[in-house]
Image (cartoon, rainbow, N blue to C red):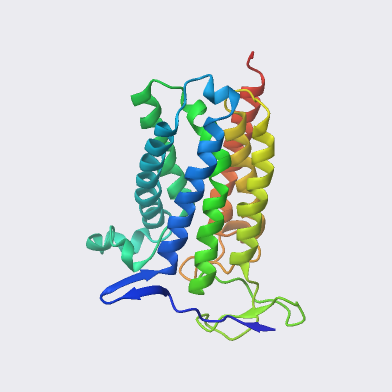
Length: 265
């Protein structure tokens, strides 16, 4: 049985300047996006459509806004609406923690819709470009969660070789390191599957649909090992809030993929 190493949340400190590990994981996520998206625009179908590296830089700018604003508002609305209804001054206090992937996803969707409108491109053309570049960023986020010792897993049998005690948790029971499960599943594995799926030209919308399906399934599975938020617990049918948010995500992905596959080339 392992004990979480309790990393110092500050990676670098230079006088009054403190750089946190979580900030570095976000920086790594954005760097990986730039690298992978530049590889994508160099592929034949995007190069012929006039995509350039300057477009990638602009996509990152729009995406960062969508992730931060959507992730924060998603956390406020999906997870703690009652609290923030009575503490409106804390809604934008992102430095106190609290981001939600599903909110970030909606924020990115809105940002990409705005980008597509401003550039005169089809919405799904834009999302098909960025979809395979997103999972590595998600992996970095989960790595940041692990370093911070947050979002720990449910209690596990002590005989599990990688069971881990998280001192920040309510009990010192061995737990699943669910952050690492998500790092591997909705991060690295989803990236590999999407990257190879998208290497072959697909109908517009199919890559986006596969991202929604893949993430929704991996996240739904990981939630069985992740401790539900103490202020929410398990919901209907003993499913977590995260699992219920994945259901419409997978359904939307399937609908998009099916409708896209029926279009003429």
